[in-house]
Length: 384
Image (tube, rainbow, N blue to C red):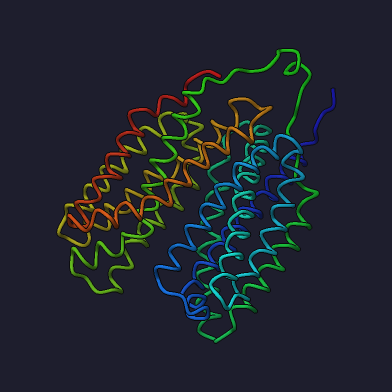
């Protein structure tokens, strides 16, 4: 039996950190340039919304195809390939001057990013298996760090008047170089002989769908905070735009800190408690943020919301990836894909409800979904 050097898992862990950070940075840099791209192409808000839905749809398809490819050719090959494709695709939106060109660019970017999302999460599960403790949440925290860095860099280059094509082109080239440079450090999933002798593992479909439903609920709740936290401060509490920014800031900082803490908490209390009590904390936090008329207390509510949601998604992805090591990619693709649908659907659902009710009342939807996740979090305890 071949003994794997401890240096290999450690190197793969660092490489996976790099991929998560790089992906968060690339996506964040695209997001801060959306208004500029909209002006350059001369499209309306409605056309932009349709094109962003196209991006989301192609990302979902990329996740499903990427999951199957991860099982077929291995994460070690798929991760750098998807990384290179993402870097190349990132250049496209900066070069687009017509709506159809932007649509094609976003179609490719969404597909590449969706494939990379599943591939690097599958690699993270493989790396985590080589460790005696949970490490998944730290990868997701690094994605948030990459996004935060993109907002700072984006503000700087936009303030300096750097053309979007140059910024996205340089970032895309950097993504390609980093993807190729870190590829040798990745590790492949272990396929011991005893797994082959045991025959095919039958994973109950209800477990996969329930994991996906919880991911949908928690990522929908996260998407609501991303798009509506600041607006709730401004419209409901009547604060200034600068004060309203603290609402999302308190949520984002708490979520990032929470993800750095989640692995240690999971090692102590287990994944069921992380999802169950985390979702309950998120529900309490959102209730406070929605009902309180005082800005400081609302900030506390948004911080509790972010802290509660921080650990749920990473432990869900770990659970999905370990249901059956031989079809880890495909199973993760279903759970990640459903979660991604929730992330996209949340802002739209809340936006639709605001036609009939105040924004803070519409937050009852993510609150109920957090309660759902808390109630059914015990699915993480289910055997394969």
